[in-house]
Image (cartoon, rainbow, N blue to C red; front, side, top):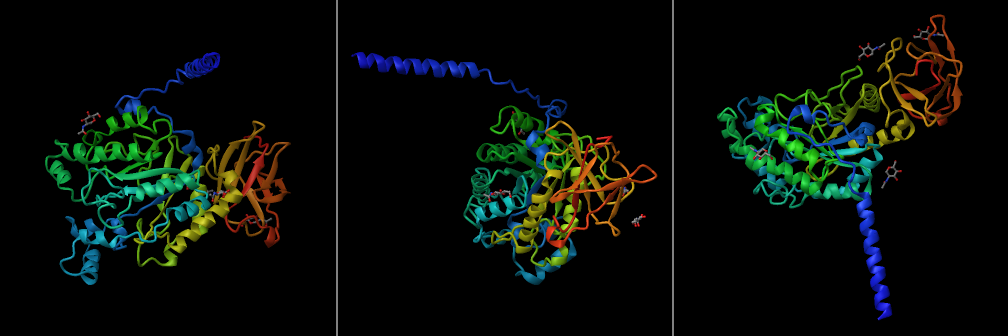
Length: 471
Ligand SMILES: *[C@@H]1O[C@H](CO)[C@@H](O)[C@H](O)[C@H]1NC(C)=O
Ligand SMILES: *[C@@H]1O[C@H](CO)[C@@H](O)[C@H](O)[C@H]1NC(C)=O
Ligand SMILES: *[C@@H]1O[C@H](CO)[C@@H](O)[C@H](O)[C@H]1NC(C)=O
Ligand SMILES: *[C@@H]1O[C@H](CO)[C@@H](O)[C@H](O)[C@H]1NC(C)=O
C-alpha cells in the first residue's frame, strides 16, 4: 500500500510538474493575425531563413518532360495560337492521332532516385528547392483527391513524386522544400467555362485550384508556395487573399512559409511575399522589397530538352555573375534545372550545381545571410558587386565580388572609404592583400599573384573589406 501511494504521489507530482511546465510555456508568443486583404497580408515580414538563404534550385518536371521540347508544348501545339515549329515537330515525330494524354504512360521516372537528387542539391550550396507540383498542363505530381486520372499515381510513374522528393530532402539535408503550383490549367473545361463567363463564376477555383493548394500544404508542408499561372484573372477570382490568410494564420507552415507575388493579374510585383515580377528578374540596383530572380540554367528552356547542347548551358562565369548581381541587390537566385522523363538530373546540370557548391564553399561568407551595402556595384570598375554583413565584433564587413581578374593585377574601387584600420583579404586565401590610395582618394587593391595551387577558385573572387570609413 505504501509503495502504491508513493508511486501514485510520484505520478501525481510528475503530472502537476508537467502541467506546470505547460502552463509556464503558455501562452506562446502570439503570432499576428492576418486579414484576407492585401493591406494586411503585405505586412507579414519575410521569414529570416529565406532572407539568408540567397540560393535555391527550381525544378520544372512534369508530363512535358516526355516530349522534352518546352514546358508549354501542349498550348503551343493545340492552343488558340499554335507555334508552327511545334506543330511541325509533333507532325514529324508522333503518329497523326497522337494526343497530349498519350504522353502519360511514357512518363515513367524509372531512374528517379530522390536521395541522389538530395545529394546533388545539398552539394550545390542551395538552401531550398522548389518543385513544380503542377504546371499549366494540369498534371499533378502527387496523388491528388482532386485530380482523377491526371496525376503521377494513376498515370505514368505510379508514384508520389512530390512526397518522395520531400521525404528525401528532409531526411538527407537541411534544405527547405517548396512547391510551385499553377493556378490555371491550359485546357481544363471548368477553367475555360469560368473564363467564358468573364470570371464571374468560380467553379474551377472552388473545385480544383483551392482544394489542391490546401491539400498540398496540409500534406507536404512546403516552406515555399510558389504560385504561377495567375495572369488571366484577378486575385478576387482566385480567392488568393483567403488562402494566404489561412496559410499565414492557421496552416502547418504558418511561421516559416514564404510565398511569391503571382496571385492574380493585380498582384505581380505589388503584393504577396517576395517579388518575382517577370521571369529572370535581375534589377541591377538595390531593391526595397525582397525579390527572387527565377531563372534558367539552360538558356532556352525551363523543362528538359532532348536537343540541349553544352553551349546552351550557363557557364560558371555566368552563374557566379548572376548570383553576385542578384544578392548584391537584395534578392535570392532561384536557378532552374529540368529533370528528364526518366527522373535524372542530366550530367551537365549536375556538374554545374556541384561547381556552384564548390564556389560557395569558398565564397559563401560573401553570400549567405548578407545584406545589400550602400551600393550594389562599384562606380569605377565594372563587374564588382558588393554585399555586407555584421561581424561578431559588431562591425560591418563589406565583400566585393570581383567578376574579372584585372589585367594588370590592380583593382580600383570607387565606393569603399579607407580608414586607419582598413584591412583587405581574399576569401579562401590566407595572406593579407595590400592596397594603396590613389590621388582621387580611391582604394587601389593590389590583387595578389597567387600560385595556381593556392588559387581559391577559378571565377569570381571575393575580397573582404574590414574597417572601412563608410562601412
Ligand atoms: C551537405 O553539404 C554540406 C556542405 O557542403 C556538407 O557539410 C554536408 O556533409 C552535406 N550533407 C550531406 C548529407 O551530404
Ligand atoms: C474563398 O475562400 C473562403 C474562405 O476560405 C471560402 O469560404 C470560399 O468558399 C472560397 N471561395 C472559393 C470560390 O473558393
Ligand atoms: C552598375 O550596375 C548598373 C546596373 O547593372 C550598370 O548600369 C552600371 O553601369 C554598373 N556600374 C559600373 C561601373 O559598371
Ligand atoms: C591597370 O589597368 C587599368 C584598366 O585597364 C588602368 O585603368 C590602370 O591605369 C592600370 N594600372 C596600372 C598601374 O597600369
